[in-house]
Length: 94
Ligand SMILES: [Zn+2]
Image (cartoon, rainbow, N blue to C red; front, side, top):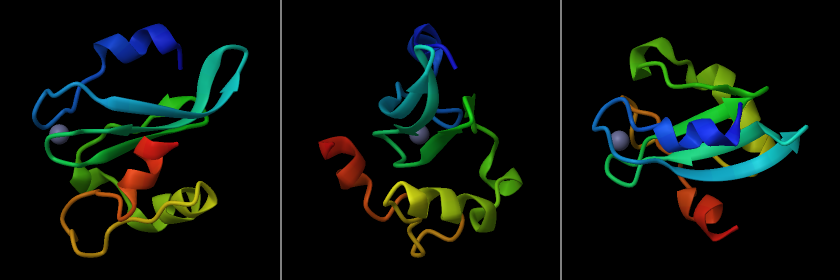
Protein backbone atom coordinates (compact mmCIF):
# COMPACT_ATOMS: atom_id res chain seq x y z
CA UNK A 1 0.00 0.00 0.00
CA UNK A 2 1.38 3.36 -1.00
CA UNK A 3 1.80 6.02 1.64
CA UNK A 4 0.18 8.60 -0.63
CA UNK A 5 -3.08 6.66 -0.29
CA UNK A 6 -3.14 7.35 3.44
CA UNK A 7 -4.32 10.91 2.84
CA UNK A 8 -7.43 9.55 1.18
CA UNK A 9 -8.26 6.97 3.86
CA UNK A 10 -10.97 7.63 6.40
CA UNK A 11 -13.04 5.54 8.80
CA UNK A 12 -15.84 3.86 6.80
CA UNK A 13 -18.23 4.38 9.73
CA UNK A 14 -17.81 8.03 10.61
CA UNK A 15 -15.47 9.39 7.90
CA UNK A 16 -12.91 10.56 10.44
CA UNK A 17 -9.27 10.79 9.40
CA UNK A 18 -7.32 7.74 10.53
CA UNK A 19 -4.19 7.79 12.63
CA UNK A 20 -1.62 5.53 10.98
CA UNK A 21 1.24 3.59 12.53
CA UNK A 22 3.57 1.84 10.09
CA UNK A 23 4.95 -1.45 11.38
CA UNK A 24 6.97 -2.56 8.37
CA UNK A 25 7.70 -1.36 4.86
CA UNK A 26 8.83 -3.06 1.67
CA UNK A 27 10.13 -0.94 -1.21
CA UNK A 28 8.81 2.22 0.44
CA UNK A 29 5.29 0.82 0.55
CA UNK A 30 3.46 -0.04 3.75
CA UNK A 31 3.56 -3.78 4.28
CA UNK A 32 2.16 -3.91 7.80
CA UNK A 33 0.48 -1.21 9.81
CA UNK A 34 -2.41 -0.15 11.98
CA UNK A 35 -4.90 2.60 11.30
CA UNK A 36 -6.89 3.91 14.24
CA UNK A 37 -10.07 5.96 14.20
CA UNK A 38 -9.95 8.62 16.95
CA UNK A 39 -13.73 8.87 16.94
CA UNK A 40 -15.12 5.31 17.20
CA UNK A 41 -11.80 3.70 18.29
CA UNK A 42 -12.01 1.04 15.61
CA UNK A 43 -8.76 -0.24 14.21
CA UNK A 44 -8.01 -1.24 10.64
CA UNK A 45 -4.92 -3.34 10.03
CA UNK A 46 -2.73 -3.26 6.94
CA UNK A 47 -1.70 -6.87 6.33
CA UNK A 48 0.57 -7.89 3.44
CA UNK A 49 0.13 -4.40 2.06
CA UNK A 50 -3.66 -4.60 2.04
CA UNK A 51 -5.77 -2.30 4.23
CA UNK A 52 -8.58 -4.29 5.89
CA UNK A 53 -11.51 -1.88 5.90
CA UNK A 54 -14.47 -4.18 5.49
CA UNK A 55 -17.48 -3.73 7.81
CA UNK A 56 -17.29 -5.39 11.24
CA UNK A 57 -19.69 -8.17 10.30
CA UNK A 58 -17.38 -9.38 7.53
CA UNK A 59 -14.24 -9.39 9.66
CA UNK A 60 -13.16 -12.32 11.80
CA UNK A 61 -11.48 -11.76 15.15
CA UNK A 62 -10.18 -15.32 15.06
CA UNK A 63 -8.19 -14.50 11.93
CA UNK A 64 -6.95 -11.10 13.07
CA UNK A 65 -6.06 -11.99 16.66
CA UNK A 66 -2.84 -13.90 15.80
CA UNK A 67 -1.63 -10.98 13.68
CA UNK A 68 -2.39 -8.49 16.44
CA UNK A 69 -0.59 -10.73 18.89
CA UNK A 70 2.46 -10.78 16.64
CA UNK A 71 2.43 -6.98 16.75
CA UNK A 72 2.09 -7.01 20.55
CA UNK A 73 -1.54 -5.92 20.44
CA UNK A 74 -4.83 -7.50 21.46
CA UNK A 75 -8.45 -7.10 20.45
CA UNK A 76 -10.68 -5.70 23.19
CA UNK A 77 -13.04 -8.49 24.35
CA UNK A 78 -15.38 -5.90 25.92
CA UNK A 79 -16.45 -4.67 22.49
CA UNK A 80 -17.85 -7.89 20.98
CA UNK A 81 -19.63 -6.08 18.15
CA UNK A 82 -16.73 -3.98 16.93
CA UNK A 83 -13.04 -4.18 16.26
CA UNK A 84 -11.29 -2.16 18.96
CA UNK A 85 -7.80 -2.70 20.33
CA UNK A 86 -7.38 -3.29 24.03
CA UNK A 87 -4.00 -1.57 24.06
CA UNK A 88 -4.36 1.00 21.30
CA UNK A 89 -2.36 3.45 23.42
CA UNK A 90 0.68 1.30 22.74
CA UNK A 91 0.33 1.89 19.01
CA UNK A 92 0.04 5.62 19.45
CA UNK A 93 3.07 5.90 21.69
CA UNK A 94 5.46 3.98 19.46
ZN1 LIG B 1 -14.48 5.61 13.19
